[in-house]
Amino acid sequence: MRPLAAVALVTALGGPAATQTPPGAALPPPIGAWHPVAELPGMGRPVDTAAVAARRRALLTRLGRGVILIPAAHERQLERDYVQDNDFRQHNTFFYFTELETQDAWLLMVARGGGEAGETVLFLPPRDPGQERWTGLRLGPDSTAARVSGIPRVLSTDSLDRVLRGALLRPPGPVYLPLDPTTRDEERVRELVFTGNDVRNLRPVVDSMRLVKDADELARLRTAVDITTLGHIAALQAAHPGVWEYEIEAALEGTFRRNGADRVGYPSIVGSGPNSTTLHYDVNRRQTQDGDLVVMDAGAEWGQYTADVTRTFPINGTFTARQRAIYDLVFAVQQAAFEATRPGTTIDQLNRVARDYMRAHSGSLCGDQTCDAYFIHGLSHWLGMDVHDVGDYSTPLRPGMVLTLEPGIYLAREKLGVRIEDDVVVTATGAQWLSAQLPRTSDGIERLMRPRR
Image 1 (tube, helix red, strand yellow):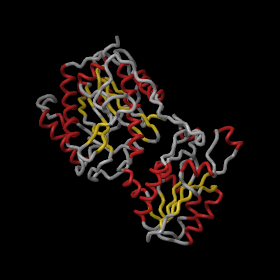
Image 2 (cartoon, helix red, strand yellow):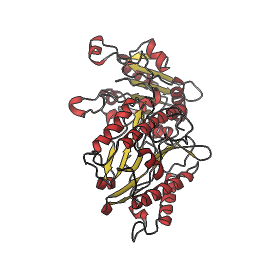
Image 3 (cartoon, rainbow, N blue to C red):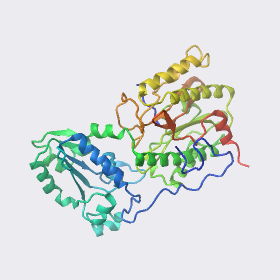
Image 4 (cartoon, rainbow, N blue to C red):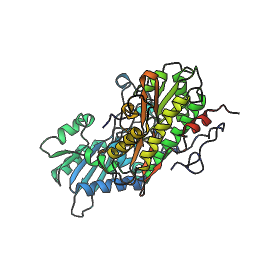
């Protein structure tokens, strides 16, 4: 998705990760990874209570001593926020430590250090039957919330001020908050926390924790990538000269939703012809013409985690010799970067590997300049709950980190842009493609686009 400025996929599609959907094969049925939970109306997915408990323990251990206060998101305002999917998405920091998609909640944790057990309290708004006629059932402060969240102590938000004052009267250390504009606007935060307390930003610590994905996060990412793969396949098989970009987008995103995606991870990019060379093009209103290349950059979000995949394809199903030569160079660059991805390397080093390879192998493909002059964005970014996920880009790679590899060449004068982007997870010995089921080679793209028999 939206490249940064220069600075095991099996369950859903079946078979080993190296296999590809045969051309002409029917698309698989919806993935069915959405498991409704009656006690979580409007949310519908179970909480991995062991995973989130482990994250909370890790945070308390890292901080040693302190009071941690994390607010949930509020409902977005239809009149102000131009809601285009639904009117609520949870704050990532709150979700990371609870996996609850409930609104207006608070998470309070106290780290006491010295080997003492920490304290965790979840605060939920009291249920309002009248309001629920409009919004649907909500999770309330009761035993059901304790069970589905795995947090034994669940109280009403009416008692938050009292409990928080008590925690602040016995200061075990600093007060940690995820400091961003939404948090600073919380009235009780201004009144209770920013008055005579040592307030520190929680985000840098949490952001560094989020760099390495646990098993639950990787499962969510794999599902998001699986759904994204099905969407790309549907879009490529719907493409033909004369189709409008938004029709390709409709095939793509309709397949996302058919297979359980919560929303798109970012605005889908479907750029044909001259639009293929515009990195952040997402208007998607041009009618394609025979001979166009199309750059399609799109990812589905599932369970608060998003995929990010790009494919470039000829609208008529067959690359010209010129298009194929550029495409195959971009493909080889991506493969070289993948083979260099292993623990201990950095994204900056991978970027140098990609550019060095492109420079050494471009020949006269891009005229008087080597093709790396037209590789005008960074190779990679972190991936997780955000499409450009949090974390320091100078951090050496470790197993469990997830990143994109997305080289590209953009020749505006020829109206010819190529980008190939895939999601990979770092392993103990190298890396694994998460999006391996979606063809990457020029031959694989053409086979996928052949008319169905």
